[in-house]
Length: 323
Image 1: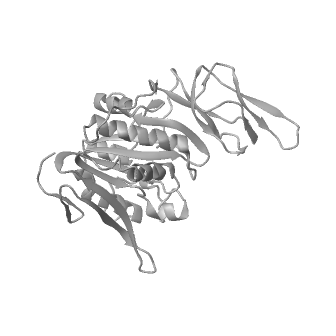
Image 2: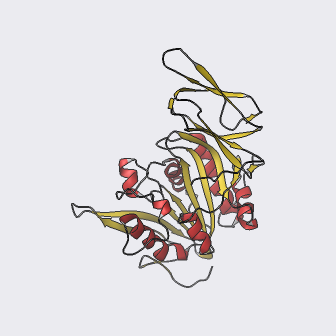
Image 3: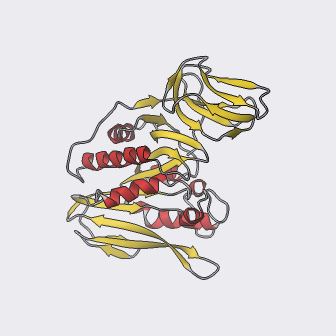
Protein backbone atom coordinates (compact mmCIF):
# COMPACT_ATOMS: atom_id res chain seq x y z
CA UNK A 1 0.00 0.00 0.00
CA UNK A 2 3.02 2.30 -0.23
CA UNK A 3 3.19 5.33 -2.52
CA UNK A 4 6.46 4.25 -4.19
CA UNK A 5 6.46 3.84 -8.00
CA UNK A 6 4.48 0.84 -9.24
CA UNK A 7 6.43 -0.80 -12.06
CA UNK A 8 4.84 -3.71 -13.90
CA UNK A 9 6.79 -5.58 -16.59
CA UNK A 10 9.17 -2.64 -16.90
CA UNK A 11 6.46 0.00 -17.22
CA UNK A 12 5.65 2.50 -14.49
CA UNK A 13 1.91 2.75 -13.81
CA UNK A 14 1.19 6.30 -12.63
CA UNK A 15 -1.53 7.16 -10.15
CA UNK A 16 -4.92 7.88 -11.69
CA UNK A 17 -4.10 6.15 -14.98
CA UNK A 18 -5.33 3.22 -17.04
CA UNK A 19 -3.04 1.13 -19.19
CA UNK A 20 -2.56 -2.21 -20.90
CA UNK A 21 0.72 -4.06 -20.37
CA UNK A 22 1.65 -7.12 -22.39
CA UNK A 23 3.33 -10.19 -20.96
CA UNK A 24 5.26 -11.85 -23.77
CA UNK A 25 4.76 -15.61 -23.62
CA UNK A 26 6.73 -16.92 -26.58
CA UNK A 27 7.05 -16.79 -30.33
CA UNK A 28 5.17 -19.16 -32.61
CA UNK A 29 7.08 -21.13 -35.22
CA UNK A 30 5.95 -18.40 -37.62
CA UNK A 31 7.93 -15.95 -35.41
CA UNK A 32 4.67 -14.26 -34.37
CA UNK A 33 4.94 -13.02 -30.79
CA UNK A 34 2.25 -14.28 -28.42
CA UNK A 35 1.31 -11.76 -25.74
CA UNK A 36 -1.02 -11.87 -22.74
CA UNK A 37 -2.64 -8.45 -22.09
CA UNK A 38 -2.90 -7.14 -18.52
CA UNK A 39 -5.52 -4.39 -18.06
CA UNK A 40 -4.33 -2.15 -15.22
CA UNK A 41 -6.32 0.54 -13.39
CA UNK A 42 -4.58 2.61 -10.71
CA UNK A 43 -6.45 5.03 -8.48
CA UNK A 44 -5.04 8.34 -7.28
CA UNK A 45 -5.06 7.05 -3.69
CA UNK A 46 -2.78 4.24 -2.50
CA UNK A 47 -4.34 0.92 -1.53
CA UNK A 48 -4.21 -2.85 -2.10
CA UNK A 49 -3.24 -4.49 -5.37
CA UNK A 50 -5.87 -6.97 -6.57
CA UNK A 51 -5.39 -9.40 -9.44
CA UNK A 52 -8.39 -10.89 -11.24
CA UNK A 53 -7.26 -13.83 -13.36
CA UNK A 54 -9.13 -16.17 -15.71
CA UNK A 55 -8.40 -18.67 -18.44
CA UNK A 56 -5.55 -20.48 -16.70
CA UNK A 57 -7.10 -23.48 -18.44
CA UNK A 58 -7.85 -22.29 -21.97
CA UNK A 59 -11.27 -23.95 -22.32
CA UNK A 60 -12.63 -22.52 -19.05
CA UNK A 61 -14.39 -19.50 -20.51
CA UNK A 62 -16.83 -18.54 -17.75
CA UNK A 63 -14.04 -16.72 -15.92
CA UNK A 64 -13.22 -14.83 -19.11
CA UNK A 65 -16.88 -13.79 -19.24
CA UNK A 66 -16.78 -12.66 -15.60
CA UNK A 67 -13.73 -10.44 -16.04
CA UNK A 68 -15.10 -9.11 -19.32
CA UNK A 69 -18.26 -7.96 -17.49
CA UNK A 70 -16.19 -6.44 -14.68
CA UNK A 71 -14.25 -4.37 -17.20
CA UNK A 72 -17.38 -3.46 -19.22
CA UNK A 73 -19.15 -2.28 -16.04
CA UNK A 74 -16.02 -0.37 -14.94
CA UNK A 75 -15.95 -2.29 -11.66
CA UNK A 76 -12.19 -2.56 -12.17
CA UNK A 77 -11.73 1.21 -11.70
CA UNK A 78 -10.84 1.49 -8.00
CA UNK A 79 -11.26 4.41 -5.63
CA UNK A 80 -7.90 3.46 -4.16
CA UNK A 81 -5.22 0.93 -4.94
CA UNK A 82 -4.66 -1.02 -8.14
CA UNK A 83 -6.74 -3.61 -9.99
CA UNK A 84 -5.04 -5.83 -12.58
CA UNK A 85 -7.26 -7.90 -14.88
CA UNK A 86 -5.95 -10.83 -16.90
CA UNK A 87 -9.04 -12.09 -18.78
CA UNK A 88 -7.12 -14.80 -20.70
CA UNK A 89 -4.07 -16.22 -18.96
CA UNK A 90 -3.43 -19.34 -21.07
CA UNK A 91 -3.71 -17.61 -24.43
CA UNK A 92 -2.57 -20.73 -26.31
CA UNK A 93 -5.31 -22.93 -24.86
CA UNK A 94 -7.94 -20.22 -25.27
CA UNK A 95 -7.26 -19.84 -28.99
CA UNK A 96 -7.89 -23.52 -29.71
CA UNK A 97 -10.22 -24.15 -26.73
CA UNK A 98 -8.13 -26.71 -24.91
CA UNK A 99 -7.15 -27.06 -21.27
CA UNK A 100 -3.43 -27.58 -21.81
CA UNK A 101 -0.45 -25.60 -23.05
CA UNK A 102 1.00 -26.51 -26.48
CA UNK A 103 3.56 -28.73 -24.73
CA UNK A 104 0.71 -30.86 -23.40
CA UNK A 105 1.18 -29.74 -19.80
CA UNK A 106 -1.43 -28.48 -17.37
CA UNK A 107 -0.26 -24.96 -16.51
CA UNK A 108 -1.80 -25.35 -13.05
CA UNK A 109 0.63 -28.16 -12.19
CA UNK A 110 3.97 -26.54 -13.06
CA UNK A 111 4.22 -23.54 -10.68
CA UNK A 112 6.45 -21.85 -9.66
CA UNK A 113 7.98 -22.80 -12.98
CA UNK A 114 11.52 -22.68 -14.29
CA UNK A 115 13.39 -20.32 -16.66
CA UNK A 116 14.76 -23.33 -18.54
CA UNK A 117 11.87 -25.79 -18.33
CA UNK A 118 8.98 -26.58 -20.66
CA UNK A 119 7.00 -23.79 -22.34
CA UNK A 120 4.33 -23.96 -19.62
CA UNK A 121 7.01 -23.95 -16.91
CA UNK A 122 8.74 -20.92 -18.42
CA UNK A 123 5.44 -19.04 -18.60
CA UNK A 124 4.63 -19.89 -14.97
CA UNK A 125 8.10 -18.68 -13.98
CA UNK A 126 7.58 -15.33 -15.74
CA UNK A 127 4.33 -14.79 -13.89
CA UNK A 128 5.71 -15.74 -10.46
CA UNK A 129 8.84 -13.64 -10.92
CA UNK A 130 7.38 -10.53 -12.53
CA UNK A 131 3.71 -10.21 -11.54
CA UNK A 132 2.88 -12.22 -8.41
CA UNK A 133 5.25 -10.31 -6.05
CA UNK A 134 3.38 -7.07 -6.78
CA UNK A 135 -0.12 -8.22 -5.79
CA UNK A 136 -1.84 -8.59 -2.42
CA UNK A 137 -5.07 -10.39 -3.35
CA UNK A 138 -5.86 -12.80 -6.19
CA UNK A 139 -9.18 -14.17 -7.42
CA UNK A 140 -8.58 -17.07 -9.81
CA UNK A 141 -11.59 -18.12 -11.92
CA UNK A 142 -12.11 -21.75 -13.02
CA UNK A 143 -14.86 -24.05 -14.29
CA UNK A 144 -15.45 -27.79 -14.23
CA UNK A 145 -13.37 -29.80 -16.69
CA UNK A 146 -15.05 -31.46 -19.65
CA UNK A 147 -18.80 -31.87 -19.08
CA UNK A 148 -18.55 -31.51 -15.28
CA UNK A 149 -20.85 -28.65 -14.29
CA UNK A 150 -19.95 -26.94 -10.99
CA UNK A 151 -22.24 -24.89 -8.82
CA UNK A 152 -20.75 -21.46 -8.14
CA UNK A 153 -18.29 -22.02 -5.30
CA UNK A 154 -15.17 -20.70 -3.63
CA UNK A 155 -12.48 -23.24 -2.75
CA UNK A 156 -10.19 -22.42 0.14
CA UNK A 157 -8.56 -23.90 3.22
CA UNK A 158 -10.93 -23.59 6.17
CA UNK A 159 -8.00 -23.32 8.61
CA UNK A 160 -7.19 -19.86 7.22
CA UNK A 161 -9.48 -17.35 8.94
CA UNK A 162 -8.80 -14.41 6.61
CA UNK A 163 -9.40 -16.49 3.49
CA UNK A 164 -12.60 -17.95 4.92
CA UNK A 165 -13.79 -14.45 5.81
CA UNK A 166 -13.12 -13.28 2.23
CA UNK A 167 -14.95 -16.34 0.90
CA UNK A 168 -18.04 -15.44 2.94
CA UNK A 169 -17.84 -11.83 1.73
CA UNK A 170 -17.62 -13.08 -1.87
CA UNK A 171 -20.86 -14.91 -0.95
CA UNK A 172 -21.11 -17.85 -3.38
CA UNK A 173 -23.76 -20.55 -2.93
CA UNK A 174 -21.04 -23.00 -1.76
CA UNK A 175 -17.70 -22.73 0.03
CA UNK A 176 -15.65 -25.92 -0.38
CA UNK A 177 -12.70 -26.81 1.83
CA UNK A 178 -9.80 -27.75 -0.42
CA UNK A 179 -6.24 -28.60 0.54
CA UNK A 180 -3.42 -27.12 -1.48
CA UNK A 181 -2.40 -29.09 -4.56
CA UNK A 182 1.35 -29.31 -5.21
CA UNK A 183 2.64 -27.02 -7.97
CA UNK A 184 -0.72 -25.29 -8.42
CA UNK A 185 -0.97 -21.53 -8.70
CA UNK A 186 -2.99 -21.41 -5.48
CA UNK A 187 -0.36 -23.31 -3.50
CA UNK A 188 2.47 -21.19 -4.90
CA UNK A 189 0.74 -17.89 -4.12
CA UNK A 190 -0.08 -19.12 -0.62
CA UNK A 191 3.63 -19.81 -0.03
CA UNK A 192 4.26 -16.21 -1.11
CA UNK A 193 1.79 -15.05 1.60
CA UNK A 194 -0.76 -13.82 -0.93
CA UNK A 195 -4.49 -14.02 -0.20
CA UNK A 196 -6.11 -16.09 -2.94
CA UNK A 197 -9.67 -17.18 -3.62
CA UNK A 198 -10.31 -19.88 -6.22
CA UNK A 199 -13.74 -19.57 -7.86
CA UNK A 200 -15.31 -22.56 -9.64
CA UNK A 201 -18.49 -22.36 -11.64
CA UNK A 202 -20.12 -23.94 -14.67
CA UNK A 203 -18.38 -26.17 -17.17
CA UNK A 204 -15.78 -25.87 -19.91
CA UNK A 205 -16.56 -24.28 -23.28
CA UNK A 206 -19.77 -22.78 -21.98
CA UNK A 207 -20.88 -19.29 -20.98
CA UNK A 208 -23.35 -19.56 -18.09
CA UNK A 209 -25.07 -16.23 -17.28
CA UNK A 210 -25.96 -17.35 -13.74
CA UNK A 211 -22.36 -18.33 -12.97
CA UNK A 212 -21.07 -15.11 -14.52
CA UNK A 213 -23.47 -13.05 -12.38
CA UNK A 214 -22.27 -14.84 -9.21
CA UNK A 215 -18.66 -14.08 -10.16
CA UNK A 216 -19.26 -10.41 -10.89
CA UNK A 217 -21.27 -9.93 -7.70
CA UNK A 218 -18.59 -11.69 -5.65
CA UNK A 219 -15.80 -9.50 -7.02
CA UNK A 220 -17.82 -6.37 -6.28
CA UNK A 221 -18.33 -7.58 -2.71
CA UNK A 222 -14.59 -8.13 -2.22
CA UNK A 223 -13.66 -4.74 -3.68
CA UNK A 224 -16.23 -3.00 -1.47
CA UNK A 225 -14.87 -4.87 1.56
CA UNK A 226 -11.32 -3.70 0.70
CA UNK A 227 -12.68 -0.13 0.37
CA UNK A 228 -11.55 -0.04 -3.24
CA UNK A 229 -15.11 0.48 -4.49
CA UNK A 230 -18.07 2.22 -2.90
CA UNK A 231 -21.32 0.53 -1.90
CA UNK A 232 -22.68 -2.18 0.34
CA UNK A 233 -21.82 -5.86 -0.23
CA UNK A 234 -24.66 -7.75 -1.89
CA UNK A 235 -25.13 -10.70 0.47
CA UNK A 236 -27.95 -12.87 -0.91
CA UNK A 237 -27.44 -16.13 0.97
CA UNK A 238 -25.55 -17.93 3.70
CA UNK A 239 -23.03 -20.05 1.79
CA UNK A 240 -23.24 -23.80 2.31
CA UNK A 241 -19.91 -24.90 3.74
CA UNK A 242 -18.64 -28.30 2.58
CA UNK A 243 -15.79 -29.76 4.63
CA UNK A 244 -15.58 -33.24 3.09
CA UNK A 245 -16.60 -34.50 -0.32
CA UNK A 246 -16.96 -37.65 -2.39
CA UNK A 247 -17.39 -38.39 -6.07
CA UNK A 248 -20.11 -40.90 -6.96
CA UNK A 249 -18.87 -43.01 -9.88
CA UNK A 250 -20.64 -45.05 -12.53
CA UNK A 251 -20.98 -48.77 -11.75
CA UNK A 252 -21.92 -49.44 -15.38
CA UNK A 253 -21.28 -48.02 -18.84
CA UNK A 254 -24.16 -46.57 -20.82
CA UNK A 255 -26.37 -43.58 -21.50
CA UNK A 256 -26.62 -41.23 -18.52
CA UNK A 257 -29.96 -39.69 -17.52
CA UNK A 258 -29.87 -37.12 -14.70
CA UNK A 259 -32.88 -36.82 -12.38
CA UNK A 260 -31.84 -34.01 -10.03
CA UNK A 261 -30.77 -30.39 -10.26
CA UNK A 262 -27.29 -29.17 -9.41
CA UNK A 263 -27.18 -27.77 -5.89
CA UNK A 264 -29.93 -30.06 -4.58
CA UNK A 265 -29.79 -31.59 -1.12
CA UNK A 266 -30.40 -35.32 -1.56
CA UNK A 267 -31.11 -38.07 0.92
CA UNK A 268 -29.63 -41.54 1.33
CA UNK A 269 -30.96 -44.03 -1.26
CA UNK A 270 -32.55 -41.26 -3.35
CA UNK A 271 -32.32 -42.03 -7.08
CA UNK A 272 -30.07 -39.39 -8.67
CA UNK A 273 -30.04 -40.75 -12.20
CA UNK A 274 -30.21 -43.77 -14.49
CA UNK A 275 -27.62 -45.51 -16.62
CA UNK A 276 -29.28 -47.04 -19.69
CA UNK A 277 -28.12 -49.18 -22.58
CA UNK A 278 -29.05 -48.03 -26.10
CA UNK A 279 -30.99 -51.23 -26.82
CA UNK A 280 -33.59 -51.07 -24.06
CA UNK A 281 -32.23 -54.09 -22.17
CA UNK A 282 -31.28 -52.53 -18.83
CA UNK A 283 -31.90 -49.51 -16.66
CA UNK A 284 -29.59 -49.10 -13.66
CA UNK A 285 -30.32 -46.64 -10.87
CA UNK A 286 -27.69 -44.35 -9.36
CA UNK A 287 -28.45 -44.01 -5.63
CA UNK A 288 -27.22 -41.43 -3.15
CA UNK A 289 -25.14 -43.39 -0.60
CA UNK A 290 -25.72 -40.74 2.11
CA UNK A 291 -27.44 -37.42 2.76
CA UNK A 292 -25.68 -34.41 1.28
CA UNK A 293 -25.54 -31.61 -1.25
CA UNK A 294 -24.74 -32.22 -4.91
CA UNK A 295 -22.53 -29.37 -6.13
CA UNK A 296 -21.16 -30.82 -9.37
CA UNK A 297 -22.81 -33.00 -12.03
CA UNK A 298 -21.20 -34.67 -15.02
CA UNK A 299 -23.58 -33.74 -17.82
CA UNK A 300 -22.08 -35.99 -20.45
CA UNK A 301 -24.72 -38.13 -22.23
CA UNK A 302 -22.52 -41.26 -22.33
CA UNK A 303 -20.53 -42.65 -19.37
CA UNK A 304 -18.08 -45.47 -18.86
CA UNK A 305 -17.80 -47.60 -15.76
CA UNK A 306 -15.79 -45.65 -13.18
CA UNK A 307 -16.59 -42.20 -14.55
CA UNK A 308 -17.32 -39.48 -11.99
CA UNK A 309 -21.05 -38.63 -12.03
CA UNK A 310 -21.93 -36.52 -8.98
CA UNK A 311 -19.76 -34.60 -6.52
CA UNK A 312 -21.38 -34.56 -3.09
CA UNK A 313 -20.77 -33.19 0.38
CA UNK A 314 -20.01 -35.96 2.86
CA UNK A 315 -19.41 -35.78 6.61
CA UNK A 316 -17.58 -39.10 6.73
CA UNK A 317 -15.43 -39.69 3.66
CA UNK A 318 -12.90 -37.21 2.34
CA UNK A 319 -11.73 -37.10 -1.27
CA UNK A 320 -9.29 -34.56 -2.65
CA UNK A 321 -10.61 -31.87 -4.97
CA UNK A 322 -8.88 -31.18 -8.29
CA UNK A 323 -8.55 -27.55 -9.34
